[in-house]
Image (cartoon, rainbow, N blue to C red; front, side, top):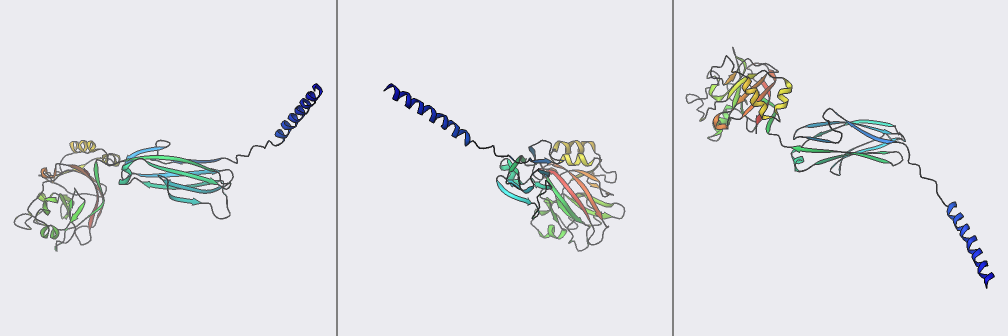
Length: 315
């Protein structure tokens, strides 16, 4: 009995050794991880590695650089998990580097929550890597009206010469004359080109009668707003900052003085391309302040001549 037990124990020991040997023989070599794959994001507006806080209308330009040791295949850019655009390597090619640009404009709907942009690269072996960028968008405390064209006045009174700074709408004299009874109350300033004044912007109350008589003896507008206008000696940087800083507009207003050619302070004359103006709306319009950037003065007082401006006004 004792011999049988020893014999069985010996068999068990030998079997255990073979078991361990068998386990050792099935050990697999590590799976190679493949070559390096990376994404780098750069850009003038990107001051933080992975986030941006800005305002609706801001534009972000991403410079995207992919390095793929085993060959680049695809770059996919998604917004909140929805693919927006993708870039692929040319057929039959697997470059080790890939560079492109991606432009994103902050939209009003982006204010509903954080926007996550995801940049994912894949190499020729199917390996992927990604980088996320979070955007927080806010509504601006100002309104911005871009590329506004105010045309030189015409005898037919059908040129869009006047501007509503609350809505960005342009009007002809005829439209004001035939519109609702309160249409004239929405006009904040107008454009004209005078023999002595050259390119000029004036409030309805200070608009030259020799061009359009807007008062009771002429076109009989019910309201002639008294918008105050001043030339502003500011830089492009100060103007850009004012888009999100109404206090900056007030500082510019306080530092500016009326045009000597306008006793009422309701006009700026002899305007040139590149000039800046600061204004304050009529009391009935809330005394809101704003800035005007003169982008172009085209021609004089003929049909088709105009001034192109951008307007920033407190919301």
